[in-house]
Every structure is written in C-alpha cells, then in structure tokens.
Length: 257
Image 1 (cartoon, helix red, strand yellow):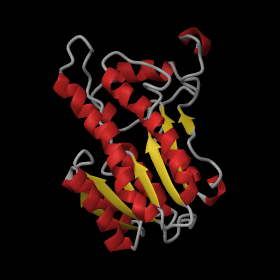
Image 2 (cartoon, helix red, strand yellow; image 1 turned 90 degrees about the vertical axis):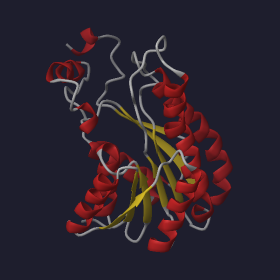
Image 3 (tube, helix red, strand yellow; image 1 turned 120 degrees about the vertical axis):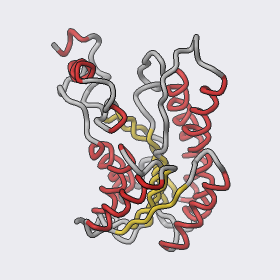
Image 4 (cartoon, helix red, strand yellow; image 1 turned 45 degrees about the vertical axis):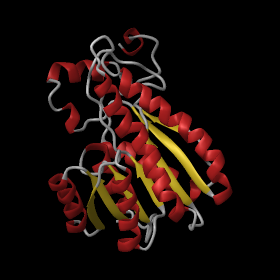
C-alpha cells in the first residue's frame, strides 16, 4: 500500500461496483479513509469489507444521490466517521438505453436526476467541509459519450455527461477562492459488470475500434483521479482528462485496422 492519500477522507459515490469500486480500492491502497456510497447495500458492504480485508480503511453508507436528504446525510457520515471531507469522487451514474423516438419523460428525468442532479447534490453537500481543507478536491466521472461522441440509445446519458462539464467549469471559478479544484475524468469503454450482458461479439467489435486494442480497467480511471486529487495537481481545475485507449482519435475504423 502507498501513502499518497494518507489520512485523507474520501467519498466515492456509486462505489459499490464497476468504476466506483475501482476508485475506492485505489484510494484506499494509497492510505485514504473511504466512504463507499451506493444504493445497493449488499454490494456496497462487500466493497467496503474487501478494502478492510486488504488492510485499508473503508465503510459503507447507503444513499441515493438524487435525494437531497440522503446526500446531506452522506456528508455528515463522512464527517462523523473520518473527521471531515478532503476529496469527493462524484461517480454515481446510470446508463439505461432508450432511443429518442421511444424515450419517455420518466426515463429522461430519471437519468438526469441521478447523473446530473446527483452530481450537483453531492458537490453542494460536501462543499462546506471541503472549504475547511487546504486542498479540497472534487472529481467527476463524466464520459466520452456526450462531450465527444454519441451512441444510439444514450441521448439522455450523453446529455448528462456533457452537462456535468458545463457545471464543472463554472464551479471551478466559484471554488477557486477556497483552493478547491474540480476536474473530470472522461472514460471510454471500461470493462465493468455493466458490460457482462452485451455479448462476446460486441466486446470484440468494441476492442477493434480502440487503437490500444482492448477495453480499459476501472483502475485506469482510478489512477487518473488519483493524480487529479494529488498535491501535484494543485494548479489544475476545470479540466477534463480522457481515459479511452485512444478510442476518440481515429477518423474511422480503417485507421485502426
């Protein structure tokens, strides 16, 4: 285990699996005290237990980031358990598929409530404690989908991920006076449980569109966040870091063949 985040109090929303679990594990390995936040109790507790069993410090808190009372209680739990909040990793997100023609208002609102409103809620709830720190850090999990690329069925998802970046840029200006930075990581295709059901053939086609020839791991995203949370990144704010194995670079599939 390292010590780059020693004694830092870190909240990871959507931390029970996938990218969030990878982020929580990497920060814990670097000495952070991690509050794993998710709606799924069993999965969240398992993630926290795995970190503790590996020698780290973590605990689980159940919260729905689209509910203000839950998010406010989340911030209070981090203060009660770990003495404050140094870093917020606002990672919680959902990506159900629905093409625009068939998409319902409920489907649109649900994705926006979790992905975009949930980001706002998490940042707002943690801000009072982050202001007390010498180097407060906010990290957002955006995506290449929306800000750079599009994909059929993900218009609502892409809109939220692009919206997060608009929110971030203004927030960066507002928070700079408190020495709080806010940055976003934009993952490409990362191998998580969310891809388990899409089939081997589709995974192989995805890999063919990536110059590095493979999907990323959750740790690839986590280590990008680790850098942005570090002292070395103290003069970086309002910026995005793409982690996609070069996926957004080719003009066409012919460029990677």
